[in-house]
Amino acid sequence: MAKPRVHELAKELGIPSKEAVAKLQELGEYVRGASSTVEPPVEKKLRAAFADRVKKQEPAKDSAAKGSAPKPSGAGNHPAATPKTAGKTAPSPCLLYNSDAA
Image (tube, rainbow, N blue to C red; front, side, top):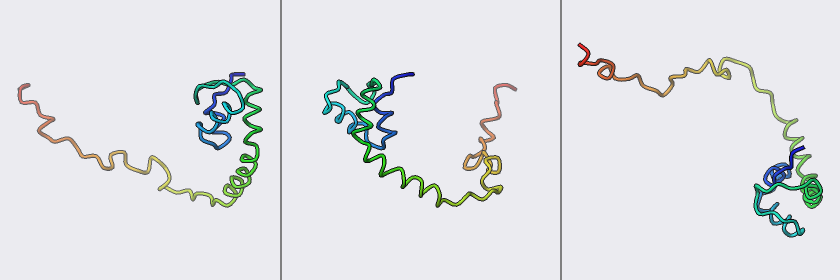
């Protein structure tokens, strides 16, 4: 299994990368930045340090997902229903005609 990077762990934990780096350095681990990889025991330390935040965030995500209404299916939601040339203008006829070719 590949070693996770600090920024990946921070994203999973819902914290800024700078905060994760600072916490790891506070715990005595050597990390230079958010792109640094960490060993599995160090990953467990970081997860344990922010376990209370993760537990508080999980119920909020579940309740938001349950309360969302399903999207209605219709022609307005399909990408093929919208014209691809919306907002674009046709090229000028003078650009299509090459007077030197005649």
